[in-house]
Length: 301
Image (cartoon, rainbow, N blue to C red; front, side, top):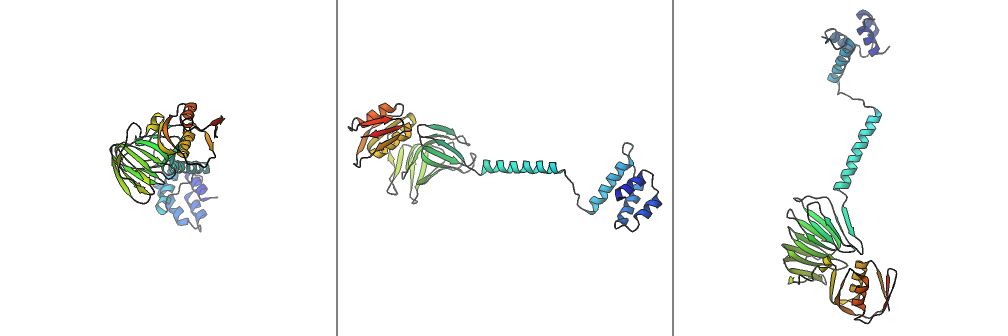
């Protein structure tokens, strides 16, 4: 008979104290059992609590006094708790560790509200990524492509790209970080532009700078009606290489332009991204370049 069964028999009155003493004599825990018996005899049992319940309470108190209390959980409860903890940890990892990404594919412009309330507009074929941040924290956004930012005042705000970094406190500006390009135009407030070689330039509202052979040009005034005109779907070029013009056409209309000539030509002009046929005519006709459309491909003769 187990220790608990002996005690229960004694509590129920089916076993005398003398008989209980004899049965536990020589047991390794005899002293502890005698202490339990002694204390149980002094128990003041409440009317609504049975003697058996009092014994359970006393037994737990004695064990807690000698050892740290051990709570045995049902395996299913343990599994549920473990799964919940794992789920919370996984959710925290995704929310606070993995970056949020927003992409504007070719042929689309996308606006996005950042966690701090800052607004960003992405040009076609552009992407930003950022980790969750608040208005009073260091705010960092990684950019590939071109975007216009309207930044809420708060902690430091950085736009980071392969070719440089733009740091602001609260302002509106346009950033182009395509290929080897770093071009920044400040529309409101001020920004600090730093290229990958460590050179920096501070821009005030109405000023712009760009990289030229890894050197930042001095801050110069820009024409507001043409700078960041992509926001309204307008694209202006001045003596731009044809490959640059074609690349913009491909981005804005999600087409591929096949041009096999090796001659170096430039284009000065304009197109709007609302109509592909009109854009092609504005570019190719003045340059006497025949072309044909086949699905989403444009072949230039």
